[in-house]
Length: 217
Ligand code: PRP
Image 1 (cartoon, rainbow, N blue to C red):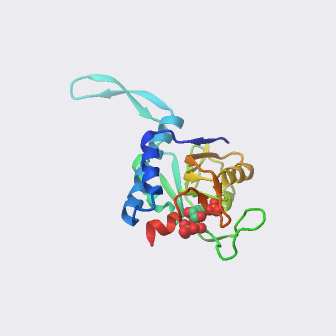
Image 2: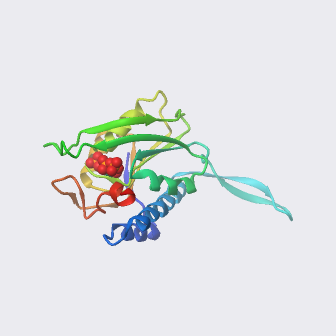
Image 3: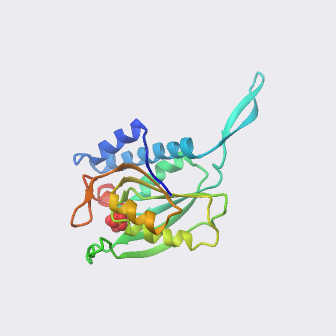
């Protein structure tokens, strides 16, 4: 798969606001919702096909255009930071089926020498995936990639392979992108920004801090 960035100016604008240390909980969460919506629109614009269809207006019949595939979308919410991000995505994909996975880094164990975290998975509930589906796994942060690699294992162990497998992040570290693309070559990674590096605690720098804590605590 490929790794790309969301180029919409509003996506960069929202990301800049949520990076700001002064942005408090409510504004942070709302920013993630807006960012999710923009990312959803960008996925539609860049990756989904349209088809022409006749439409009867109150006055006449004319040619209209519809987006194909909007009924074949699965959004996977990686708890907990992805929840507001997914809320925004749902505005772009209102009929998406949803999966929920609780996967989190064991911060106490810490990062090992290979730059990986042990991941504890506590809850997995996925809708059935079909071969027509676009599966979007949403998590605002792709740091070491340990969480996403684990989540992807669950998705790809389903019996059907989806048509498109997308990993969507607000901020990624280069390490995480490498890790996920090696672990899952079929997945495309979409990120609003690719940041400089990880610090020794596995936090993305410059990043936006701990998205889960900033949105919920
Ligand atoms: C954060 C973030 C990602 C993960 C990224 O979640 O939301 O899920 O870390 O890091 P990785 O790429 O190194 O795995 P965290 O584990 O803090 O859980 P939380 O969302 O419940 O706070």
